[in-house]
Amino acid sequence: MHHSRRQLLVAMGLGGMAVLVPGTVRGQKKYDPGASDSEIKLGNTCFYSGPASSYGTIGRCESAFFRMINEQGGISGRKINFISYDDAYSPPKTVEQVRKLVESDEVLFMFNPLGTPTNTAVHKYLNAKKVPHVFVGTGATKWGDPEHFPWTIGFQPNYQSEGRIYADYIVEKHPDAKIAVLYQNDDYGKDYVKGLKDGLGDKAKSMVVSEAPYETTDPTIDSQMVNLKSSGADLFYNVTIPKFAAQAIRKAAELGWKPVHVLNNVASSVGVTLRPAGLENSKGILSTFWLKDPTDPTWKDDAGFKQWVAFMDKHYPEGDKSDVNNVYPYTVSQALMQVLKQCGDDLTRANVMKQAASLHDLELPMLLPGIKVNTGPTDFYPVKQMQTARFDGERWALFGPVMAAKVHV
Image (tube, rainbow, N blue to C red; front, top):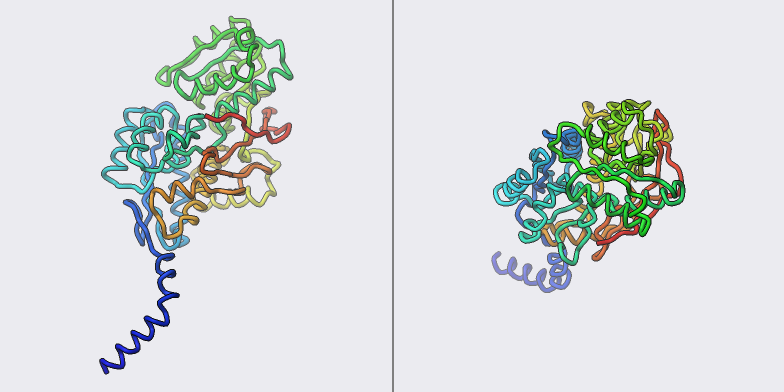
């Protein structure tokens, strides 16, 4: 009995050897901390409180998305364990929460942590620890620098590119504009201002007549608005998060100041910015889009829009369907699903970064038509296109072509 069994094993071994070995090597499971046969642990920080808490819906929507994925069986049978902490848009708090996620929760990687000043505070730490900092939830230009920060990759079009698009528009349509700038006094605000000035070139010095910074801790920006109006400017470049954007729109109306109004797209939400500011006060505002705005009736019969609505109805019914900040997390989470599919059974941190940087013409349901996700080993800007839009008092009306971003680190 023993004898014949051994012979059988030897025969199998000899016959099957060439076939077996590559098979086992190819199918080998590789894990770093935070990954196993049963789960993939993701870390996240979001603003569930503080001055930017209107963005808290992003983390809640992502939690709902991963719950849906887990109900459907996960990714190759692995459940997503999404651990999201509140940092209240305060960089020292971010440092504390991210250290906890990396050193105590032992997440495989950070996914879509929100905010420019907050991510800036952990940028060097995550790269030193070689923990992927994937699809960072901010458009700062510096997230696309694989040469110096190979573990950090952005997602949305970068702020400097957006600023340049506004500059091109201004030069073409309002060449004699006197520009007043309201901006958040940090890397986010300064990135947008740099984009505008670089785009205006030599004309920036004469065209920009007034600049007013604000701090996220300021209760209001009324005094800044009074100063900007009194500068005699006839074009307002509004670089603010929703809370302050709504205040600025309301204050301009109160002061009877009616400049051409350009609003950065991070505050373009109808539900969170324009409605609180007053739709009538918001009429004529210009911005850019790369996602389908959920309040735009253009998409009512669109398959991608219907898919998003079905997701919201079933998995996040308490979420606001007039807020583009519920379209964004759905879209960035879908991009992550593609990255994890490409990872297969090699769930190492190095492979997560490699796959995040290997996306080719990825189309997602809520990206505007013609906009695709592309990355490469030296291209850490996944979404590089956007389109201008004007608010008509009821909805954002897109106009002009889809434009490519031209700014790199």
